[in-house]
Image (tube, rainbow, N blue to C red; front, top):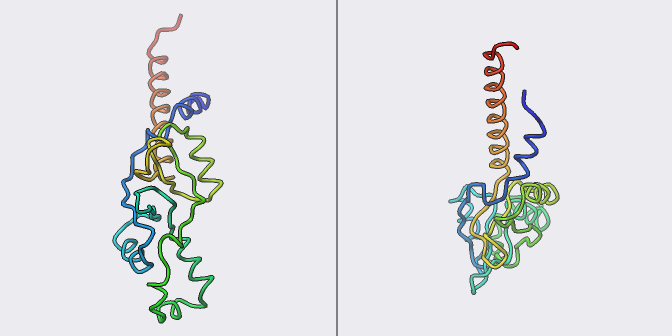
Length: 171
């Protein structure tokens, strides 16, 4: 196996900047629900960042937000899609969810995981620092990939140590 203390030591070194930056393209706060659906249909991202006319990040729209919108306002999807005005009535600015925190490149893995847990989200918006606008996303899957890679490295190191010990002559 491997030393758990070493694993925790390695995990404490990880910062948000160590993860792949998943690029995003935000939408403006005055874009309609129809435009939001068009964006979601052409993207594999589960969230869409929303910016104002000055280009400042003001929140996000998640797939969950859209689902809850339909659950609150309508009794069935058939009813939703039979009312065309729904797609032009709502704008991104009205639908944003500003509860998700922004993760900054210097944030620890612990903070990232705490935020994902607290907000029950597998993806969070990411920026270089508090003065910069969001530039991407950080995914829970990337965190697990990194943890898996560290564990593999530690297991390989332990195996190498064992082989060296077996080859050493007894004293």
